Structures are given as structure tokens and as C-alpha cells.
Length: 81
Image (cartoon, rainbow, N blue to C red; front, side, top):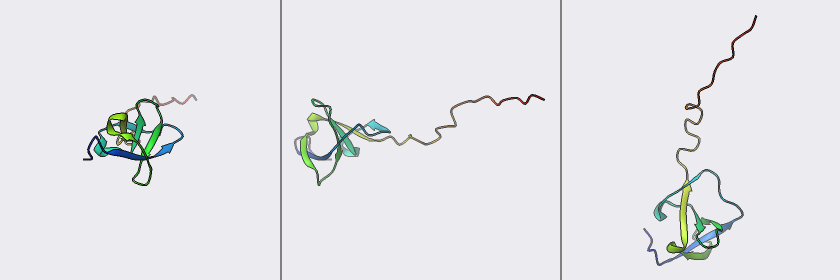
């Protein structure tokens, strides 16, 4: 796991990514700057955006899309003759 004092590199994003959940730094793919609210995709090719203490970390939500319809109950329509 990277040190919390090492600079974090990332690519800026226009909007918040969909289907993400908060996680620890070691599993993160995205980050949001705590002060500015800007979103980033973590990347070694990106610019330095701050330290780990400046950012909240996120990853794609593993449960997104899995069994998404199985928990929703629906009523069947009855036939009218």
C-alpha cells in the first residue's frame, strides 16, 4: 500500500463516475478531492492531485448490476376475458 505522504497522480474527470462506492486507498480507481470536490481517475500517467490525506477514495461498486432485478417483486397482470 502506498504511503499517505506520497503524492497521488490522477487524470481529471468532468463528472462523478457512476456505480462507485467508497473504499480504501489500496483498492481505489477514483478519488474526490476533499476541499475542491473535483473527481479524478487514479493513474500513474496523470498529474499530481494531492496526498492521500487530501482525497476520498472510490472503486467500482462490485454489487452494481449483479442480481439487480431479483430483489424487486412485481405483480403479474391478470387476463380479462
